[in-house]
Amino acid sequence: MAIGVNWAEVWSPVWKAVWTQSPPEQPPDDTPTVTPAGSSRRRRYYVAIDGQDFPVASEAEAVSLLQRARAIAERQAEVKATSVERRLKKRADVPAVALKTPAISVAPELREATAPLIADIERLYAKASMEMELRLLLEKQRLADEDDEDVLLLS
Picture 1 (cartoon, helix red, strand yellow):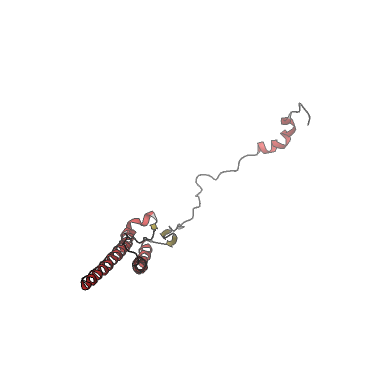
Picture 2 (picture 1 turned 135 degrees about the vertical axis):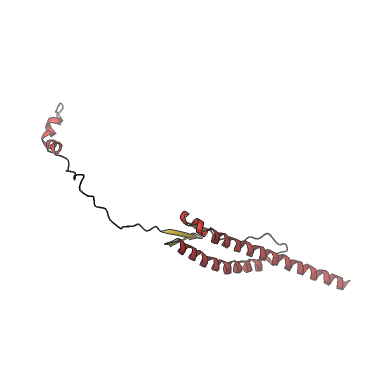
């Protein structure tokens, strides 16, 4: 590499062809532009229950899915309540018990239509928790009454 070389002169024959090229011709404005007709992008919605996503195509399908989930939740809440109740019967005191409600989220467009069903599922779990706690309290009360009767009979 020589010092003092004018690189513009060295490269001018190479770049001259690039600099002199004209840009590609644009179609005249009266030429119709081609657009895909009838192509629609289907909107995909989702319903997520306990972290598992369920894709749904429409609002009606989301409502149907949540109705099935409600039926399952009704049975599941009772099963969970029974198992927790069996475990807590052995304790001397009755703690406040709340069953864990499944986490349900939906696409923002579906919130209005699915809000009553989601609230209903949450009510089911709250009701099962309350009934379970009430059964435990009644059982503890029954056992206490039996002990009192035994004490009276022994006296």
